[in-house]
Every structure is written in C-alpha cells, then in structure tokens.
Amino acid sequence: MSTEQSPDIEAIRQVIATIEHSQRNESPEEFLSLFRHDAIWTTAGGRLLWGLTEIADFTRQALPGAMAQQTVTYELVDVLFIRPDVAAVKGRGQYRTLDGVPQGNPTTPMYVLAKEEGRWLITAAQNTEQLPG
Image 1 (spheres, rainbow, N blue to C red):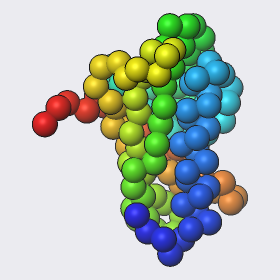
Image 2 (cartoon, helix red, strand yellow; image 1 turned 45 degrees about the vertical axis):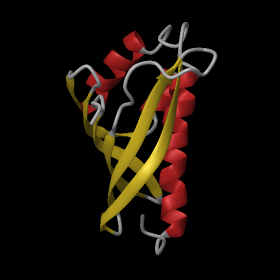
Image 3 (cartoon, rainbow, N blue to C red; image 1 turned 90 degrees about the horizontal axis):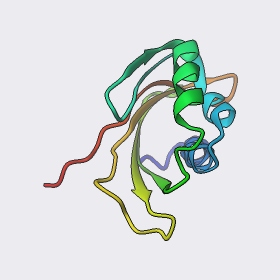
Image 4 (cartoon, helix red, strand yellow; image 1 turned 90 degrees about the vertical axis):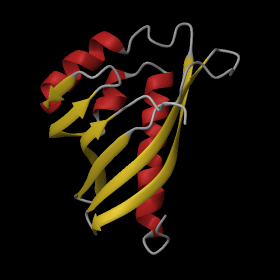
C-alpha cells in the first residue's frame, strides 16, 4: 500500500470505517453519504445498481434489520492511486455472529473512489464473496 499519500490513505481508511459503522448500526443515510450521485454498485448478491437513487432505494430496504442476528467487520487491504484524485481500493469484509464468530466466506469488495472537494466518494463498487483457495 502506498505510504506517499498518507493523509489520503487515512481518509480512505475512514471511508472503510464508515462503511462498517453504517452497516453495523443499520444507518442507510450514513452509508449513502459515501456515494457520488452517479455511482455504480454491484451488491454482494450480484444486483447492479445505477446512480444514487437506485442505491438508496436498495439500501433503505436491505439495511434496516440486516444486523439483527449478525454483525460485520471491514478492513482496508490495499490502495492503488490511479491518479492523485482517483483510487482503486481493496477491502475485506466478514460477517460474524453477534458473539464475533465468522460466518461464511469473507467478502472482497473493490471500490473506485474519487476525491471531490477534498472528500473521497465511492464512484463504483462491487462486493463479491471470496471463495476458498
């Protein structure tokens, strides 16, 4: 992971932390605040969502109640700066029981972030289950 742009790495790490916080606390608005208006997102279930309106509709239906019997953790794995204001960000997610025991395979989300007015926003994302091996 690049250390040359450490303030940006820390800001991107905060995006990942906010994803975790918003999902663990079932906060659709906090989650949606991370996206550009024209973002593209493919959910872990393979559903393709175009633009913030579709992402918001999906999130407001799916997120409330999603953590009643589980929780989730996310971590930053790597950042590739494509340009100073565009980054490919690799994460790792893990659903867990409320006692912290991992459930199923981890996920391996990929985010394309764009820096706009000093803030990193999700432009495109895909969350995929990580298969063993």
